[in-house]
Image (tube, rainbow, N blue to C red; front, side):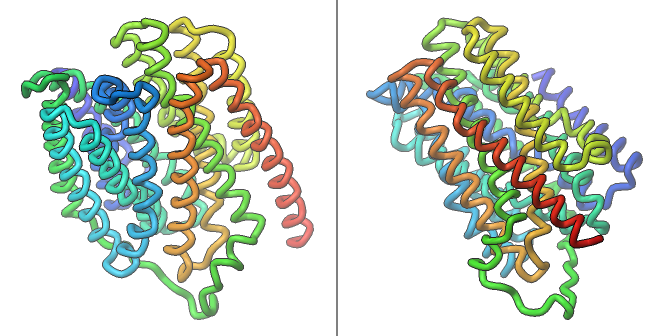
Length: 418
């Protein structure tokens, strides 16, 4: 419990420091403080979802199903979340997401008490559904940013809050594991998670609806079929989707491979997962500086190269340090690729088109991520860890093809501007 209190204190202190350092709008500060309290639900499912499911399910190859359904829930909720945000506003959508997450946490408690695999997987799906609304927070941050050039910096700062979620989630899972008796443990973990979701809701009461200026010169909204054909849209969505899917693919397989197949301890497994999720967000301290130095196209190539290193390390062995280094680099590469894709996306739409483009982006991104996490369990139990790594290579190759397309696009834009 002491570690959890320390993390909470660090969230508050970091919010105060970053607000003063970068003169952040109040909305960004509130998002930075509230986001890790709800984002920690995903690390909890990643950490213990597979372990619980392997005990609850009759077929071991279904152990990654709760994680897959959580991600599928994000994909399924992305369009409704965007529609609600458009019709009712960002703040209403945020509280709708918090409500779903709260229901999911309480339902998970009931599922564990009843030893119901089906009910636990449904709760996992609801975690994803609520998470779709939480994913919209990055767009709320973009809309709360006054200068378009500050978008990468704003996103980097917001992503940095994920470091706290990385440590908070697994700590909640372990600390509260036996707070409430259940046949397989962890029921108390979801009780404590429900408390943090409620705390995040209290913080977001002070969030103000972003004001969006729609210029008359922008004209009417274009059909989605026209928008998705733009090279910049294809580059943005492909970068984020492949980066996210590959990250989820390897991350989902790791706890099962480490703990169930290789016999590494639960503590070692927790350490690797915590380190990985922290590595997903800690680079955000440097990415604003990197974007200034090497631009987004440099960040894209750097992320792609890091993914090659991930495959090489993961294939070289299955000791704890092999997993640790591979997952650390996987997190860093994901950060660069996701930031690049998210920063490029606003270049593909007008203000009046933002909701439908954002919904399309998230539906595709999390749909592929859900499929990747589901396949991770099947390939792991049928082919082993090395096959999981080998099957990731074609997608790494695809990342380099995207690099070529983006470089050509940038050169063409420069020629047109000159």
